[in-house]
Amino acid sequence: MNEFHAGVLRRTIRVAHDADGQTLHIPKDWAFSEDEVDLIRNEDGSLRVEGRRARRTPKELVEWLRSQPPIEEDFPEIEDLPPEPVDLDPKE
Image (tube, rainbow, N blue to C red; front, side):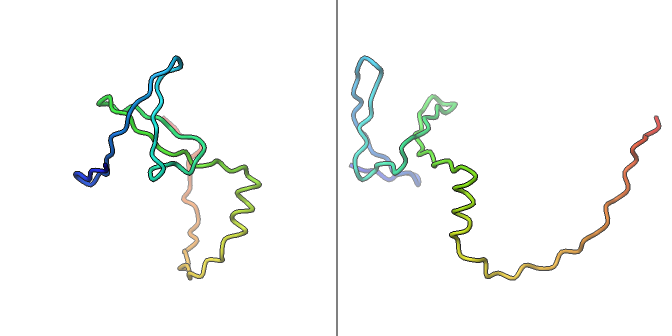
């Protein structure tokens, strides 16, 4: 049964023990869409499981960017100021 408390949805599940460690059976309605997850130990000792987003290769990233619709927003003009001088020979 799901519980909602202080803005957090919580569900209690059983832990299965085997020779390699422990296994959590995550119910279908809470399943991850990712193939990998990050297991995070918080300072208070609690564990957090987060889905790991798939990493894209540079080629995949370019393909994804090309598949996105163009940005229809008008961006404001930015004043192109000259760089400030830099003293490359500081005297002590």
